[in-house]
Image 1 (tube, helix red, strand yellow):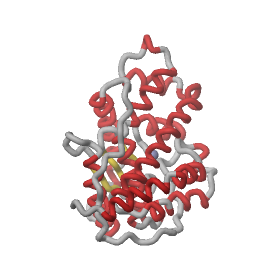
Image 2 (cartoon, helix red, strand yellow):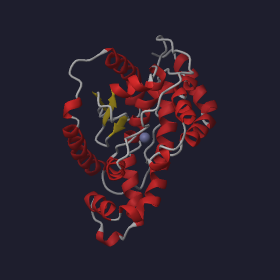
Image 3 (spheres, helix red, strand yellow):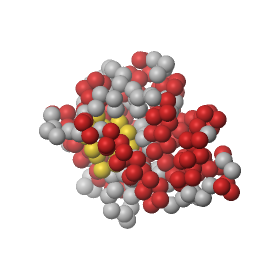
Length: 278
Ligand SMILES: [Zn+2]
């Protein structure tokens, strides 16, 4: 989830556990055969007309990431247990499709493993994705579900959701006083409670989009979309009380929207599995 910087600010303010809050999983999906092949099709298309530059937003995100790393200093993974190998294996399988989302650019996405019990998964607009091994253990994620989580986080970065959110937030404020991303962040902090309802709508929209694009990316990489959704099914079964106060929409609504995309994503998955060009 994000920790795109704005959501990160919001979570700090509300003292809500980041993303997907540590819910137990019921694994419903079938295992994905390791011989699946990725199909490197670009499905992530950044919106046009966004305010600020990608580099400006990325620079602020890097600062936020460094502050997060300071907080997580005690939870950096030094020796990797078996879960880390599994996550890195899934990450490697996603790479051909992730690289295809940034045509002409060098790869900017980086995966960092931590083992904090207070963090699940999050991303920063500079390209850094964190996932906690404690989250994997607690939620008992299989490879397809890990792929969905990682692809969801990557989609926030690829779709430039932090920049989208800053652009939308600027539209809610008096534009004459707001010249930079720093101005927007300061204004959000200052007017957090009065802007909360509007920012929540924006945040939810980006979550739906990250769900959808993430599902597509992981499917193209050879992860069965039905198996990926076991993660969201478990969140929906678990209940919705937690997500009511988070930056994320209700899991039942997220699942409903994801299931509506299954006919398309199942075709993308079949294309990835059957691709003979690689
Ligand atoms: Zn998210």
